[in-house]
Amino acid sequence: MIWDRKNECLPREEIGQLQLERLQSTLNRVYRNVAFYKKRFDRLKIGPDEIQTLRDLAQFPLTMKEDLRESYPYGMFAVPLREVVRIHSSSGVTGKPTVTGYTKNDLHHWSQLTARVLTAGGVTKDDVVQITFKYGIFTGAFGLHYGAELIGASVIPMSTGNTRKQALIMQDYKTTALVSTPSYALLLGRYLEQEGINPQSLSLKRGLFGGEPCPESMRKEIEERLLIQATDNYGVSEVMGPGISAECEYKNGLHLYEDHFIAEIIDPQTLKVLPPGAEGELVLTTLTKEAFPMVRYRTRDITSLDYSPCPCGRTLVRMKKVLGRSDDIIVIKGVKVFPSQVESILLEVEGVEPRYQILVEQVGGVDTLELKVEVNERVFSDEIKNLQKISAQIERKLREIIGIGAQVKLVAPESLQPTDGKLVKVIDRRKK
Ligand code: DLL
Image (tube, rainbow, N blue to C red):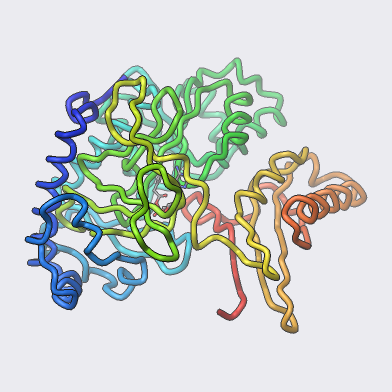
């Protein structure tokens, strides 16, 4: 099913033309209304009129999270505050949060976009949607909430935590669609087994997961445990929140809503734009946002773009599932470690949750790594001897597969504290 067939299935030439027109207008607006952009463009002696083709965008400077922090809180707004009707913030996954604003029109577009996401994941007006993102300043819950209401689904605004109550409501209210992070869905799935709740007794049919990476092995386990179809959706608060890209039923990449965003892939080292298909860092430019337009925002997320046709009929480019963040790579004693590698190891260990936190420190000039991992209730109340066996097993796998020595600490279920439902996966306390 497609929510906005006209805009999601535009011929490719028309997408390009629409993007060019909207890009020219966005650059004009930011140049006139945001001192940060004016100063930068002037310094490089480039102006909005430079844009003759979409390729010309590469001449414009990249915007980074640090730039937003310097303009904290409202310095990057392109409209007066009285035009802003909603204020959100990023989840602060990597440091101090940033502020974003939305006009009435922005909110209208945002609901349309999350309605596209939900429809692509199979949600219709007949669904009962349980949202377990945190309701508050984080974009996840409100963003998807309004899209679900626009579709006409019945929305349960559960917010985060309290797995017992989440499961109870899921049973009693006959939830058909779960909207959450993939790691929370997995936790819920394992909780059901532990409590002897048969997933066949639930009405659940689909899960729409986002906010953090969901490797294929994780998707498979969630689908098997909850007996659902799971799709991935992606978003970044600084750019909009959820509603930037989402998988369709073919699950072969996330269709990126190109009528509202331009996607580029750059080499994170040289910062040069890479050709289609190459793997690198995703850079996003907004095309319709009024309150908080963003030009060439470095998301830090590693992916690639696929322009080949999709059997679903959408003509929008597909981004590959995010592989990890370019700033999440930890170098320990010269070895490069991706949190996703650690996650794959944890997924294979019985009784262990893929909910973890990596703490890197320097003790006497030597890098040390501690890995805190949640285990399920049964394992946690097991004998010390068995807990030690599990941590030794993880330590051995880390040494054999990734080549790093780590101290593994097993902790109680749900004891690692998420920020807005997302865990900060890497804490690096070494001096840069
Ligand atoms: O996480 C917005 C969102 C909420 C998206 C709910 C989807 C569902 P931030 O808190 O600003 O916004 O975090 C953005 O989260 O740069 C990625 O590193 C990561 N991320 C988000 N979605 C995915 C995904 C929201 N589907 C950061 N796969 C991004 C992998 C994701 N990583």
